[in-house]
Length: 251
Image (cartoon, rainbow, N blue to C red):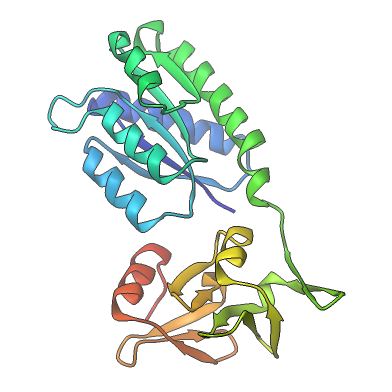
């Protein structure tokens, strides 16, 4: 499970320092899957990322004010919190006068770091915040999960996630079909429930939840996903474009 790190800071030099600090932390924690996904001065790029990655596990490092943008950091943080109750938000700024607004907006940040404490102190606090994020957030998203559990009647089943291509549902039924690399299993559940258990899976359609790791290629002409066992499933053109862009899957 990937911890996506997003930086939004209008000062290019400071943004570069923050990137360096976080990359140093990542290097010293090889057992944790985390990456700087976006580093930008433009808060609109962050909102676009949020729209296209609703289920990512996220850590945000934000300034409160962006002089070159109509959107303030507090507005961006409010939008983030409205879309993602679990995201961790750290403010790093000189605008302490805006602190009361953070509480008024119910943003619930993980930390509030003053730029005036100096780069070494910022680094120390940032490392602490990343540590807290990993301890609190990553385990809750089943970081080491390798199996999917379900029941058919009273009997429990355990299935290896790397063998699952996708889940499919049909109208007027309360069952879901698990399409694996060697069989299809029907069991009572909903895609919405499964999606919360498997946040890395991609909702390719209202009736389709796919495993990106098992997609071998994309047949753009016929709008199909091709899995590692050469089975296929249909996907809409819009969902196909998003999948190609954010999962870097070849045609």
